[in-house]
Image (cartoon, rainbow over all chains, first blue to last red; front, side):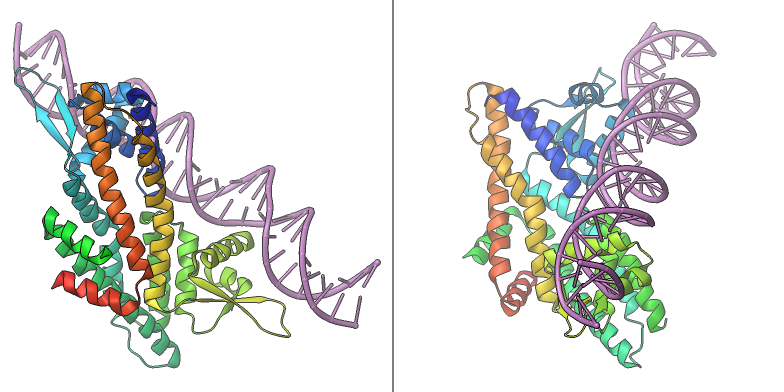
Length: 166
Length: 166
DNA sequence: CACATCTTTCAATTTTTTTTGAAAACAAAA
DNA sequence: TTTTGTTTTCAAAAAAAATTGAAAGATGTG
């Protein structure tokens, strides 16, 4: 397999996988493209490489910048914006954790906290509350853990994970 | 908020959240319904409660059983199947980890392993390989960690997580 | 076997999500 | 100010995913 082929395969796979991750294909492909580009790219180059429309490229580049996975570069004398991917994997993972936690875990916590207001009266309620309480306990624990993970530095992360694997 | 209301809210929220998780709404709602049902339910009861079609209920019940989040109960003398949710939260989380890892992480690992075959010749390739190598290292570490998590028992899990939070 | 009860399948439909592309907005330079 | 190169927006179109429901498939029963 040569480099060009491998890059294409990487971009394609990253995109296909994204749907499983609940992230749209274009966003993942733009990310993948920038990850494997040694040089920053303009929106035009991105749309050309991936054969996607301007609006699509623009929206997803912005989303990636929001996620903290891609950065803008401004060159003096030039008006267009260049984009390049964050290459430090620990930062990438941290940003993904932050964003997915915000989307996936936090809304759940909010709902569960509301649920906590239900009083335990009838047998039904007892069962319901016990289920909700268990989920809440777990979710809060997970939330705290992810928060510390995010605050930790790369070495601490590696160390802790290696400890877990033993 | 009374119990009935809370249950409905729980089912609705769990379903809405599911789309963010890359899991379809019906599957999540069926799961939520069974979680808060003190008694096992039949497919008919599920379709009635959630107002969904037979095929939908059947497919998602099967999927949930596949995921190990729901179990079947057969009652002698009766022909229909009853379904009830796994209530032990550690088991639920473990099953979700297993299934999401299979869907999300494992395919990525396979692709990355293929990529590893690319030789480092031109400057481009060097950059490409370095990116892929980093992602691979991280992913393998994550994979190992999740594997041990899954094998661990609930106490070990809690202990380790608490250690991380410190 | 024929019937009754329940489960599974799947083509067609509906809903949701993503993508397009033309127009508007913006901002630097002439 | 006008021109020019660029980004942003968003309604419409396309694509993808989920859902329906009727029909077929099982499976136990008289």
